[in-house]
Length: 341
Ligand SMILES: NC(=O)c1ccc[n+]([C@@H]2O[C@H](COP(=O)([O-])OP(=O)(O)OC[C@H]3O[C@@H](n4cnc5c(N)ncnc54)[C@H](O)[C@@H]3O)[C@@H](O)[C@H]2O)c1
Image (cartoon, rainbow, N blue to C red):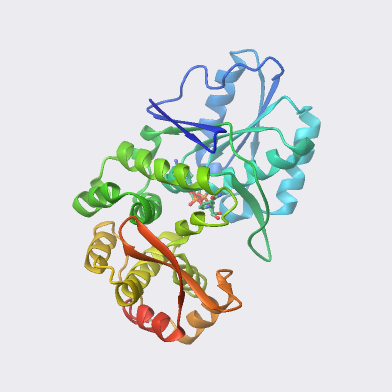
Protein backbone atom coordinates (compact mmCIF):
# COMPACT_ATOMS: atom_id res chain seq x y z
CA UNK A 1 0.00 0.00 0.00
CA UNK A 2 1.26 3.50 -0.78
CA UNK A 3 -0.13 6.66 0.74
CA UNK A 4 -0.55 9.97 -1.06
CA UNK A 5 -2.35 13.08 0.12
CA UNK A 6 -4.48 15.66 -1.68
CA UNK A 7 -4.99 19.29 -0.61
CA UNK A 8 -3.84 18.36 2.89
CA UNK A 9 -7.23 16.70 3.43
CA UNK A 10 -7.42 13.44 1.54
CA UNK A 11 -5.36 10.37 2.26
CA UNK A 12 -5.11 8.10 -0.80
CA UNK A 13 -4.36 4.43 -0.28
CA UNK A 14 -3.48 2.32 -3.31
CA UNK A 15 -3.07 -1.42 -2.93
CA UNK A 16 -4.62 -4.83 -3.33
CA UNK A 17 -7.73 -5.54 -1.26
CA UNK A 18 -9.26 -3.29 1.38
CA UNK A 19 -7.19 -2.08 4.35
CA UNK A 20 -8.47 -3.41 7.68
CA UNK A 21 -9.91 -1.56 9.46
CA UNK A 22 -11.13 0.44 6.47
CA UNK A 23 -11.98 3.64 8.35
CA UNK A 24 -9.64 5.44 10.71
CA UNK A 25 -11.17 5.43 14.21
CA UNK A 26 -13.45 8.37 15.05
CA UNK A 27 -15.18 8.29 18.44
CA UNK A 28 -18.25 10.21 17.21
CA UNK A 29 -18.85 7.93 14.20
CA UNK A 30 -21.75 5.52 14.68
CA UNK A 31 -23.28 5.20 11.26
CA UNK A 32 -21.90 4.70 7.76
CA UNK A 33 -24.08 5.15 4.65
CA UNK A 34 -22.65 3.37 1.61
CA UNK A 35 -23.79 4.59 -1.81
CA UNK A 36 -23.28 2.25 -4.72
CA UNK A 37 -24.42 1.22 -8.21
CA UNK A 38 -25.69 -2.10 -9.61
CA UNK A 39 -22.37 -3.51 -10.98
CA UNK A 40 -20.61 -3.29 -7.61
CA UNK A 41 -23.41 -3.75 -5.08
CA UNK A 42 -21.84 -7.05 -3.85
CA UNK A 43 -18.65 -5.13 -3.03
CA UNK A 44 -20.66 -2.51 -1.12
CA UNK A 45 -22.45 -5.26 0.82
CA UNK A 46 -19.08 -6.83 1.70
CA UNK A 47 -17.81 -3.46 2.98
CA UNK A 48 -21.01 -3.00 5.00
CA UNK A 49 -20.55 -6.44 6.59
CA UNK A 50 -16.97 -5.68 7.53
CA UNK A 51 -17.97 -2.31 9.09
CA UNK A 52 -20.74 -4.03 11.08
CA UNK A 53 -18.14 -6.42 12.45
CA UNK A 54 -16.42 -3.28 13.81
CA UNK A 55 -19.64 -2.35 15.65
CA UNK A 56 -20.69 0.39 13.24
CA UNK A 57 -24.20 0.69 11.83
CA UNK A 58 -23.89 0.39 8.05
CA UNK A 59 -26.58 0.94 5.42
CA UNK A 60 -26.18 0.34 1.67
CA UNK A 61 -28.10 2.73 -0.58
CA UNK A 62 -28.35 1.67 -4.24
CA UNK A 63 -28.24 4.38 -6.90
CA UNK A 64 -29.40 4.17 -10.53
CA UNK A 65 -26.62 3.35 -13.00
CA UNK A 66 -24.41 5.90 -14.77
CA UNK A 67 -25.57 9.52 -15.19
CA UNK A 68 -29.05 8.63 -13.92
CA UNK A 69 -27.47 8.72 -10.46
CA UNK A 70 -26.39 12.36 -10.81
CA UNK A 71 -29.72 14.16 -10.44
CA UNK A 72 -31.27 16.36 -7.78
CA UNK A 73 -34.15 13.91 -7.38
CA UNK A 74 -31.72 11.05 -6.63
CA UNK A 75 -29.89 13.36 -4.21
CA UNK A 76 -33.23 14.10 -2.52
CA UNK A 77 -34.06 10.42 -2.14
CA UNK A 78 -30.59 9.84 -0.65
CA UNK A 79 -31.11 12.69 1.87
CA UNK A 80 -34.40 11.03 2.84
CA UNK A 81 -32.60 7.70 3.31
CA UNK A 82 -29.95 9.49 5.45
CA UNK A 83 -32.71 11.01 7.62
CA UNK A 84 -34.40 7.63 8.12
CA UNK A 85 -31.05 6.03 8.96
CA UNK A 86 -30.26 8.84 11.43
CA UNK A 87 -27.01 9.88 9.71
CA UNK A 88 -25.61 12.79 11.69
CA UNK A 89 -22.71 15.25 11.69
CA UNK A 90 -20.06 12.84 13.00
CA UNK A 91 -21.00 9.99 10.66
CA UNK A 92 -19.55 8.91 7.33
CA UNK A 93 -20.71 8.48 3.73
CA UNK A 94 -18.83 6.04 1.48
CA UNK A 95 -19.13 6.04 -2.32
CA UNK A 96 -18.39 2.61 -3.84
CA UNK A 97 -18.51 2.72 -7.62
CA UNK A 98 -17.55 4.65 -10.71
CA UNK A 99 -17.31 8.41 -11.08
CA UNK A 100 -21.07 8.90 -11.07
CA UNK A 101 -21.31 7.33 -7.60
CA UNK A 102 -18.39 9.25 -6.12
CA UNK A 103 -19.66 12.52 -7.69
CA UNK A 104 -23.10 11.99 -6.11
CA UNK A 105 -21.66 10.72 -2.83
CA UNK A 106 -19.41 13.78 -2.53
CA UNK A 107 -22.34 16.07 -3.30
CA UNK A 108 -24.76 14.62 -0.75
CA UNK A 109 -22.02 14.30 1.87
CA UNK A 110 -20.89 17.88 1.28
CA UNK A 111 -24.42 19.24 1.70
CA UNK A 112 -26.01 16.92 4.31
CA UNK A 113 -25.96 18.83 7.62
CA UNK A 114 -23.57 21.28 5.90
CA UNK A 115 -21.02 18.57 5.36
CA UNK A 116 -20.21 15.12 6.68
CA UNK A 117 -17.12 13.00 6.08
CA UNK A 118 -16.96 11.18 2.75
CA UNK A 119 -14.74 8.28 1.69
CA UNK A 120 -14.43 7.15 -1.94
CA UNK A 121 -13.79 3.61 -3.08
CA UNK A 122 -13.57 3.97 -6.87
CA UNK A 123 -14.29 0.81 -8.85
CA UNK A 124 -13.52 2.11 -12.35
CA UNK A 125 -10.11 3.22 -13.60
CA UNK A 126 -11.54 6.62 -14.53
CA UNK A 127 -12.88 6.91 -11.02
CA UNK A 128 -9.53 5.97 -9.52
CA UNK A 129 -7.32 8.26 -11.60
CA UNK A 130 -9.69 11.19 -11.92
CA UNK A 131 -13.22 11.43 -10.48
CA UNK A 132 -12.50 10.41 -6.89
CA UNK A 133 -9.55 12.80 -6.53
CA UNK A 134 -9.83 16.55 -6.02
CA UNK A 135 -13.18 17.09 -4.35
CA UNK A 136 -15.29 18.14 -7.35
CA UNK A 137 -18.71 16.65 -6.84
CA UNK A 138 -22.16 17.37 -8.14
CA UNK A 139 -25.21 16.56 -10.21
CA UNK A 140 -26.36 17.38 -13.73
CA UNK A 141 -29.10 19.96 -14.26
CA UNK A 142 -29.64 20.86 -17.89
CA UNK A 143 -25.86 20.66 -18.38
CA UNK A 144 -23.30 18.34 -16.84
CA UNK A 145 -22.14 19.00 -13.29
CA UNK A 146 -23.91 22.38 -13.12
CA UNK A 147 -24.85 22.01 -9.46
CA UNK A 148 -22.07 20.98 -7.16
CA UNK A 149 -19.66 21.59 -4.37
CA UNK A 150 -15.97 21.02 -3.76
CA UNK A 151 -15.95 18.54 -0.93
CA UNK A 152 -12.77 16.54 -0.48
CA UNK A 153 -12.97 12.93 0.58
CA UNK A 154 -11.22 12.12 3.83
CA UNK A 155 -9.91 8.90 2.30
CA UNK A 156 -9.73 7.30 -1.16
CA UNK A 157 -9.01 3.58 -1.37
CA UNK A 158 -7.99 2.17 -4.75
CA UNK A 159 -7.96 -1.61 -4.97
CA UNK A 160 -5.87 -2.51 -8.02
CA UNK A 161 -7.34 -6.05 -8.04
CA UNK A 162 -10.68 -4.42 -8.89
CA UNK A 163 -9.03 -2.35 -11.63
CA UNK A 164 -7.40 -5.42 -13.18
CA UNK A 165 -10.76 -7.21 -13.41
CA UNK A 166 -12.44 -4.36 -15.31
CA UNK A 167 -13.94 -4.95 -18.76
CA UNK A 168 -11.74 -3.62 -21.58
CA UNK A 169 -14.08 -0.77 -22.49
CA UNK A 170 -14.03 0.62 -18.94
CA UNK A 171 -10.25 0.25 -18.78
CA UNK A 172 -9.87 2.29 -21.97
CA UNK A 173 -11.97 5.10 -20.44
CA UNK A 174 -9.53 5.33 -17.55
CA UNK A 175 -6.42 4.97 -19.69
CA UNK A 176 -7.54 7.96 -21.79
CA UNK A 177 -7.65 10.16 -18.66
CA UNK A 178 -4.42 8.70 -17.30
CA UNK A 179 -2.68 9.51 -20.60
CA UNK A 180 -4.03 13.06 -20.45
CA UNK A 181 -2.65 13.39 -16.94
CA UNK A 182 0.71 12.09 -18.12
CA UNK A 183 0.80 14.59 -20.99
CA UNK A 184 0.25 17.55 -18.70
CA UNK A 185 2.28 16.37 -15.73
CA UNK A 186 4.32 13.15 -15.95
CA UNK A 187 6.48 12.19 -18.91
CA UNK A 188 7.27 8.81 -17.32
CA UNK A 189 3.58 7.97 -17.16
CA UNK A 190 3.42 8.87 -20.87
CA UNK A 191 6.40 6.64 -21.61
CA UNK A 192 4.73 3.73 -19.78
CA UNK A 193 1.62 4.12 -21.91
CA UNK A 194 3.58 4.76 -25.12
CA UNK A 195 5.58 1.57 -24.68
CA UNK A 196 3.05 -0.75 -23.08
CA UNK A 197 -0.41 0.60 -23.95
CA UNK A 198 -3.16 -1.25 -22.08
CA UNK A 199 -0.60 -3.71 -20.69
CA UNK A 200 1.02 -0.97 -18.59
CA UNK A 201 1.05 -2.01 -14.90
CA UNK A 202 -2.09 -0.58 -13.33
CA UNK A 203 -0.51 0.07 -9.93
CA UNK A 204 2.02 2.38 -11.58
CA UNK A 205 -0.52 4.04 -13.85
CA UNK A 206 -2.92 4.74 -10.98
CA UNK A 207 -0.22 5.93 -8.58
CA UNK A 208 1.41 8.22 -11.13
CA UNK A 209 -1.86 9.70 -12.40
CA UNK A 210 -3.13 10.34 -8.88
CA UNK A 211 0.18 11.90 -7.87
CA UNK A 212 -0.05 14.42 -10.72
CA UNK A 213 -3.69 15.27 -10.07
CA UNK A 214 -3.08 15.47 -6.31
CA UNK A 215 -0.24 17.95 -6.86
CA UNK A 216 -2.27 20.15 -9.20
CA UNK A 217 -5.37 20.14 -6.98
CA UNK A 218 -3.32 20.88 -3.89
CA UNK A 219 -1.88 23.97 -5.60
CA UNK A 220 -5.11 25.11 -7.30
CA UNK A 221 -8.20 23.69 -5.66
CA UNK A 222 -10.81 25.93 -7.30
CA UNK A 223 -9.48 25.88 -10.88
CA UNK A 224 -8.27 29.48 -10.88
CA UNK A 225 -5.15 28.39 -12.73
CA UNK A 226 -3.33 25.16 -13.39
CA UNK A 227 -6.24 22.82 -12.52
CA UNK A 228 -7.60 23.79 -15.96
CA UNK A 229 -4.66 21.89 -17.50
CA UNK A 230 -6.50 18.69 -16.60
CA UNK A 231 -8.97 19.65 -19.34
CA UNK A 232 -6.38 18.84 -22.02
CA UNK A 233 -8.24 17.34 -25.00
CA UNK A 234 -11.62 18.06 -23.43
CA UNK A 235 -12.69 21.20 -25.35
CA UNK A 236 -12.92 19.42 -28.71
CA UNK A 237 -13.44 16.04 -26.98
CA UNK A 238 -16.62 17.14 -25.19
CA UNK A 239 -18.07 18.50 -28.43
CA UNK A 240 -17.33 15.20 -30.21
CA UNK A 241 -18.89 13.30 -27.29
CA UNK A 242 -22.13 15.32 -27.47
CA UNK A 243 -22.33 15.07 -31.26
CA UNK A 244 -21.61 11.33 -31.51
CA UNK A 245 -22.24 7.99 -29.89
CA UNK A 246 -18.58 7.73 -28.85
CA UNK A 247 -17.74 7.30 -25.17
CA UNK A 248 -16.11 10.02 -23.07
CA UNK A 249 -12.68 8.36 -23.25
CA UNK A 250 -12.89 7.80 -27.00
CA UNK A 251 -13.92 11.42 -27.54
CA UNK A 252 -11.22 12.79 -25.26
CA UNK A 253 -8.66 10.67 -27.12
CA UNK A 254 -9.70 12.37 -30.37
CA UNK A 255 -9.72 15.73 -28.59
CA UNK A 256 -6.14 15.13 -27.43
CA UNK A 257 -5.01 14.38 -30.98
CA UNK A 258 -6.68 17.58 -32.26
CA UNK A 259 -5.20 19.62 -29.38
CA UNK A 260 -1.78 18.11 -30.03
CA UNK A 261 -1.94 19.19 -33.65
CA UNK A 262 -2.83 22.76 -32.59
CA UNK A 263 -0.05 22.57 -29.97
CA UNK A 264 2.44 21.61 -32.69
CA UNK A 265 1.28 24.42 -34.96
CA UNK A 266 1.12 27.18 -32.32
CA UNK A 267 3.69 26.13 -29.74
CA UNK A 268 6.12 23.83 -31.53
CA UNK A 269 4.97 20.71 -29.61
CA UNK A 270 6.79 17.77 -31.17
CA UNK A 271 4.73 14.93 -29.68
CA UNK A 272 1.80 14.66 -32.10
CA UNK A 273 2.96 11.32 -33.52
CA UNK A 274 3.55 9.94 -30.02
CA UNK A 275 0.04 11.02 -28.99
CA UNK A 276 -1.59 9.39 -32.03
CA UNK A 277 0.30 6.12 -31.61
CA UNK A 278 -0.43 5.95 -27.87
CA UNK A 279 -4.15 6.58 -28.40
CA UNK A 280 -4.04 3.74 -30.93
CA UNK A 281 -2.17 1.44 -28.51
CA UNK A 282 -4.80 2.15 -25.88
CA UNK A 283 -7.44 0.79 -28.29
CA UNK A 284 -9.05 4.20 -28.75
CA UNK A 285 -10.05 5.61 -32.16
CA UNK A 286 -7.75 8.08 -33.90
CA UNK A 287 -10.38 9.40 -36.30
CA UNK A 288 -14.15 9.68 -36.54
CA UNK A 289 -16.53 9.34 -39.51
CA UNK A 290 -19.94 10.70 -40.25
CA UNK A 291 -19.99 13.73 -37.96
CA UNK A 292 -20.90 17.20 -39.15
CA UNK A 293 -17.88 19.45 -38.43
CA UNK A 294 -20.15 22.52 -38.27
CA UNK A 295 -22.14 20.93 -35.44
CA UNK A 296 -18.96 20.06 -33.55
CA UNK A 297 -17.70 23.64 -33.98
CA UNK A 298 -21.01 24.97 -32.75
CA UNK A 299 -20.80 22.75 -29.66
CA UNK A 300 -17.23 23.92 -29.02
CA UNK A 301 -18.64 27.47 -29.04
CA UNK A 302 -20.93 26.49 -26.17
CA UNK A 303 -18.13 24.91 -24.18
CA UNK A 304 -17.58 26.65 -20.87
CA UNK A 305 -13.89 27.23 -21.62
CA UNK A 306 -14.85 29.92 -24.15
CA UNK A 307 -14.41 33.39 -22.67
CA UNK A 308 -15.28 36.88 -23.91
CA UNK A 309 -12.13 37.12 -26.01
CA UNK A 310 -12.61 33.91 -27.96
CA UNK A 311 -11.78 30.30 -27.38
CA UNK A 312 -9.15 29.30 -24.84
CA UNK A 313 -7.77 25.79 -24.90
CA UNK A 314 -5.15 23.90 -22.98
CA UNK A 315 -2.22 23.24 -25.33
CA UNK A 316 1.22 21.72 -24.84
CA UNK A 317 4.60 23.30 -25.47
CA UNK A 318 6.00 19.92 -24.57
CA UNK A 319 5.03 17.00 -22.37
CA UNK A 320 4.71 18.33 -18.79
CA UNK A 321 4.57 21.92 -20.09
CA UNK A 322 0.91 22.86 -20.67
CA UNK A 323 -0.35 26.36 -21.41
CA UNK A 324 -3.83 27.90 -21.53
CA UNK A 325 -3.93 29.64 -24.87
CA UNK A 326 -6.26 31.60 -27.15
CA UNK A 327 -6.99 29.63 -30.30
CA UNK A 328 -8.38 30.95 -33.58
CA UNK A 329 -11.35 29.11 -35.08
CA UNK A 330 -9.27 28.33 -38.19
CA UNK A 331 -6.79 26.43 -35.97
CA UNK A 332 -9.61 24.54 -34.25
CA UNK A 333 -10.82 23.50 -37.71
CA UNK A 334 -7.32 22.31 -38.65
CA UNK A 335 -7.12 20.34 -35.40
CA UNK A 336 -10.49 18.77 -36.08
CA UNK A 337 -9.35 17.83 -39.58
CA UNK A 338 -6.53 15.71 -38.11
CA UNK A 339 -9.20 13.37 -36.67
CA UNK A 340 -11.27 13.29 -39.87
CA UNK A 341 -13.67 16.13 -39.10
N1 LIG B 1 -15.34 14.80 -9.94
C1 LIG B 1 -14.43 14.80 -10.89
O1 LIG B 1 -13.38 15.45 -10.78
C2 LIG B 1 -14.65 13.98 -12.12
C3 LIG B 1 -13.60 13.78 -13.03
C4 LIG B 1 -13.84 12.96 -14.13
C5 LIG B 1 -15.09 12.39 -14.32
N2 LIG B 1 -16.10 12.63 -13.43
C6 LIG B 1 -17.42 12.03 -13.59
O2 LIG B 1 -17.28 10.61 -13.57
C7 LIG B 1 -18.38 10.05 -14.30
C8 LIG B 1 -17.84 8.96 -15.19
O3 LIG B 1 -17.20 7.99 -14.39
P1 LIG B 1 -17.27 6.43 -14.74
O4 LIG B 1 -16.89 6.20 -16.14
O5 LIG B 1 -16.58 5.71 -13.67
O6 LIG B 1 -18.84 6.24 -14.73
P2 LIG B 1 -19.92 5.31 -14.04
O7 LIG B 1 -19.99 5.53 -12.58
O8 LIG B 1 -21.17 5.55 -14.82
O9 LIG B 1 -19.39 3.82 -14.32
C9 LIG B 1 -19.42 3.32 -15.64
C10 LIG B 1 -20.08 1.94 -15.67
O10 LIG B 1 -19.20 1.02 -15.03
C11 LIG B 1 -19.93 0.17 -14.15
N3 LIG B 1 -18.96 -0.30 -13.16
C12 LIG B 1 -18.44 0.37 -12.10
N4 LIG B 1 -17.52 -0.37 -11.49
C13 LIG B 1 -17.42 -1.53 -12.17
C14 LIG B 1 -16.62 -2.68 -12.03
N5 LIG B 1 -15.69 -2.78 -11.06
N6 LIG B 1 -16.79 -3.70 -12.92
C15 LIG B 1 -17.71 -3.61 -13.91
N7 LIG B 1 -18.49 -2.53 -14.10
C16 LIG B 1 -18.35 -1.50 -13.24
C17 LIG B 1 -21.02 1.08 -13.65
O11 LIG B 1 -22.11 0.38 -13.11
C18 LIG B 1 -21.40 1.86 -14.91
O12 LIG B 1 -22.33 1.13 -15.68
C19 LIG B 1 -19.03 11.18 -15.05
O13 LIG B 1 -20.26 11.52 -14.46
C20 LIG B 1 -18.05 12.35 -14.92
O14 LIG B 1 -18.69 13.61 -14.93
C21 LIG B 1 -15.89 13.40 -12.33
